[in-house]
Amino acid sequence: MSCANVKECACPKKTCPNNGKCCTCVIKHKTTDSLPYCLFLNNEGDKSIKNYYKKLKERFE
Image (cartoon, rainbow, N blue to C red; front, side, top):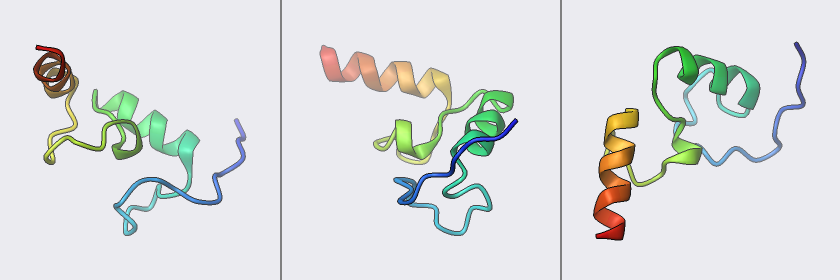
């Protein structure tokens, strides 16, 4: 599988080996049941799906 890497990665974790490699990053997060920082910026360090739903609920209550 090949994909074009992004030119400017939105992820603040510049030391991550997957920074700027979106396809690899998404596959990694799929296997760990978590969200990449670029999709879930206000996560307070917890990128779990459970926390994502919690944050959504807080936002819309």
